[in-house]
Amino acid sequence: MPHQGKEFSDDKDKLCLALREKVKQVGGCGAENGPREPKTCSVVVSPIQPQQASKLVPVLSELLPLNDGLSHLKRVRRVSFAGNAASVELEIVLCRDEVWEHRKADASEVLKSFNLQLEKRMVPATAPLSREELRKWGDLWPLIFKPGKHLHKPPSPVELRDMYNHMSRTTELAESVEVPPNCAVAAVLVHPASGEVVACGLDKSQRHARVSDGTFTVNTKLSHAVMNCLSSFASPHIPTISNEEEQKNTDKMGKKQLKRASCLPNDQYLCTGLDCYVSREPCVMCSMALLHSRIRRVVFACFNPEHVGGFSEAKIHKESALNHRFEAFLVPVKEIDSEMRSCKT
Amino acid sequence: MFNSRAQASHSQIRLNARAMEVALYEARKALERGEVPVGCVLVTEDGETVATGSNRTNERGNATSHAELVAFEELSNVKKMFKKGELTLYVTCEPCIMCTAAIVQMEVVGHIVYGCSNPRFGGCGSVRSLDLYRGRPDGHVPTIQSGVEAATAIHLLGEFYNRTNPHAPKPKKRRVKR
Image (cartoon, rainbow over all chains, first blue to last red; front, side, top):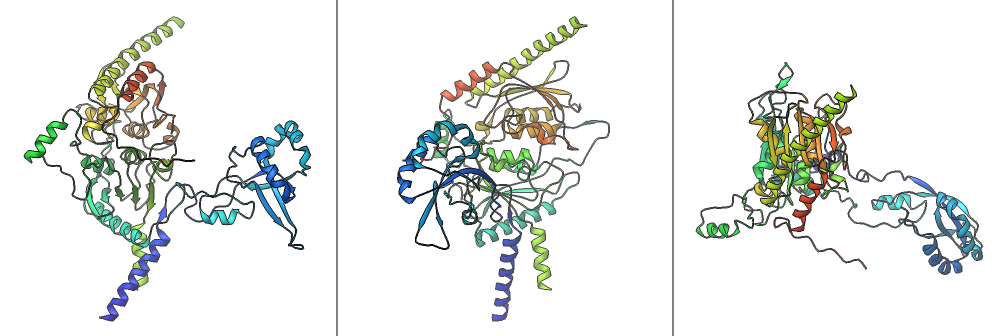
């Protein structure tokens, strides 16, 4: 019926809107949730004639290179006067204010012939991380923007809906199997292209079972959902040098079959390219375990006030000192569901 | 007074050396298996070894099977109850962030002694520090001692990295910058 079809697509739109509003990227560079206010620092600038620029720029890049964290600044900017549009004047940046204090003596000797009138000006102290920031901060001083590893691409509506579907299934799984002293936490590994679930794990840490006399059993403490999920996915079948030949033989005989899901490539290395869905934000241990496993993306439904959050607090998924970086998303399934329900009534 | 304290620290040094010897032995075993050579040992206050562990990441295809977690697995089979901070952990290399978090959550380790530091992954000061876990109701934050037999640990790691890791993925080609 056409009426039903319309309602269905309305529902879809509502979900889409709710997702765009509620889903948040966690941690990260900070530019995900709109452009930030620029941090500024003071630099020394001077107005120059346009004819001077071609001579002065090479001299300055030799004498005072902008490599002390100001490489995002363009050297020269155009200053237009409201009254006289025909006369173009330029402004050139020399260096940081405090650097000028040190270099004053030798630099002014070289720059004497250019007849500079020095002024101080506030400019953005850090490079812009998104095009919005480039536009907003560019009013202070023209900037160089390098879209690259820092560029934040928001997930597409299709991706958002996939994330929501997997997340709500994971939350349902977590709630359906709750066994007190364990927590109702589940973790699921998903192959994003096919949408196939390749592994899952439940919390077996019994962390709510405390013994009162100050001693405790240690056997289950680290059995968190993510850790269980990762070890259930781990495959000891990766051929090593010593048993590569043996592997070939067994492959021929067809005795030993890889237990990998069909969607994964044969040379799957750890969890490369996979997404992890957890019903609650992983602790630092689990987050770092996901990093060691080279996960592509982590999605969770709520924060965990009990533990130090691996993403919201420790921010290890964006730590440049570590060898792998990935995205973390908060998809508050409960909130989205209740919003959908309130929209319907 | 001074004398007895000197003796105590002397015996402590001897205990450290002996325990670290066991950890290094574990690391060498890992190297023979083609793993990154890291080994560890959990020791009680009297110097009794309760669990040992060495890196098994390649063997299990599981990136979380670090020496420390393998040792904790072994510890879980020990039919004994431990008090908070009762054990000392000797590791040849600084525990990574994951293992440090595990140590804090396990609560049984009161003191960590490690060899070389780990600027790539270290969770005891190199990339993240123990301050992350302070002031929390859960967990026990241990004290740290570093640099015990560091040279030997580094030598072992060097021996591993001089070989090529057959399990590592092929590096992606980098764009050549002009």
